[in-house]
Length: 457
Image 1 (tube, rainbow, N blue to C red):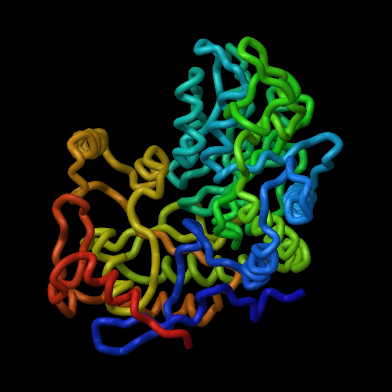
Image 2 (cartoon, rainbow, N blue to C red; image 1 turned 30 degrees about the vertical axis):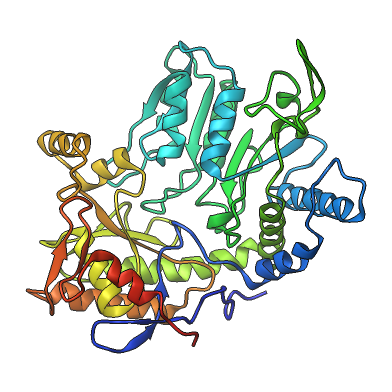
């Protein structure tokens, strides 16, 4: 199946711009969150009349809801290339919750070591700092590291209890040699968690990873579900991350008998709608084929990153153009604050991008090449909640429905911004948030109010 022609719910909406014209919204923020596939929205709409409690109800709607919930779990495991005999899929809110879940379940000692990297999203850094010591694999100026450097870090004593590593950077789109890295870790007897939040919508998932985590909101199922996948045997012992109804076989005042996994890991009423949505997205992406998705991504990545690199006054962050990456491009515009660039793209051209540090502060500090003095200023301002001068960049990222024409619209708009010595209208900056908005609007949320009134194309 071809990717061309796929549209998401909300594609084609018109948004007002400062010149008085309405333009089709160009969404280049897929790395943060995606719209819903129509097939996902339809699956949810068809399920909703049958929604009921799952696993413990005898009524027809409860039975049907339970079947839909468990069918979604099977689809998610199949998407990840896993068998329900050997592995389980624990349904949770998102990737962050999934990693925190695993951090609790690993029962690490504070003196234990978790090996991770400076490339990680905060979700794969902060949970491990709560439960163990962290050892970091550094990156070079281009934001990359090699499998050999991972091996060298694994050779350092003490041997880590886990390697927690991204499958793809949410900042640069760079893809570590993940299969080779997993193989090396296993040679040392170290299990591997792969944060696949960015990887899952774009590439096949590594089957050799011990643990996988990813989110529906980044793979066209924004209904509040994510997943932790891991060996069934790993979860057979120990108490779960969340304790409550549904996780138990027996409770009295001084004893609890936990359920078998995955039920013991999913206390409380689950997000059945989110599970149905994530299962539908997994089925749809498989029906297209990850090869077709990759071909689409490769075309857009070359156009996006190559186009930015050619614009004078712009600096593309991350690996060289010849490097295989996801269709993600992060850049800075010389002499212009990143927040102002993003505001202008939105207000003047109807283009949505992301700016800031992308929940990956250590990585962006390295990509920007900040001096020690600049980092110290960064820390000072952050500690005092002063965001006006915080360093950052602009990120454009494409999804399954992004077209080459939309990328060209973005590049053309960037050329206009980069070649301007001044903005066509005045912008104000909020000294607290660091955000910019057109001065002709009374307040920052006026832009939101204006953009909330839009019509379908």
